[in-house]
Amino acid sequence: MTIAIPVEGENLKIVKRTGQAPYFAIYNNNEFIKLVAAPKGHSHDEHKEHHHGDDEEHIQGHSKSLVNIAECDLILVQAIGEHMKEALERENITIKKIRQKDGEFASQAIESYLQSRS
Image (cartoon, rainbow, N blue to C red; front, side):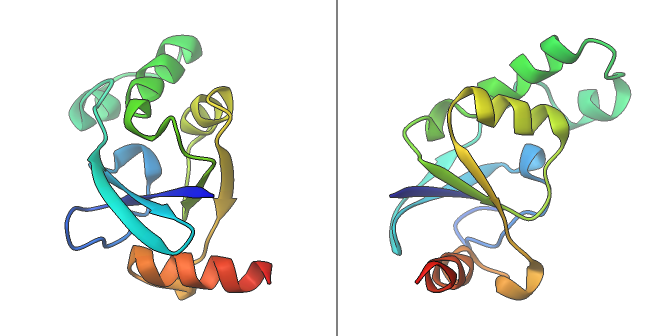
């Protein structure tokens, strides 16, 4: 199972808001594979300024940030907006919510998630 987690960067610290993550950590089960950039469909400043009136355009913007995780089966998230959620569902990536107590770093969250499944 290939799992993505939104992170800050090489430190693999989890980013709370999935749509604002600059990177995704990619794991095969509990083995770290790579760190990939999250190309932005629109900048964070544009995100603050624009209104969510055109839902389809907004979803398409988030879809652009998922190009590097398209092969993933699952994404672990702490918080996710409705447009990012829709974009992930369109890519057939399963979304699982995690809590801050599951860990501050991707490896901790992966371990906690995998243990909860056994």
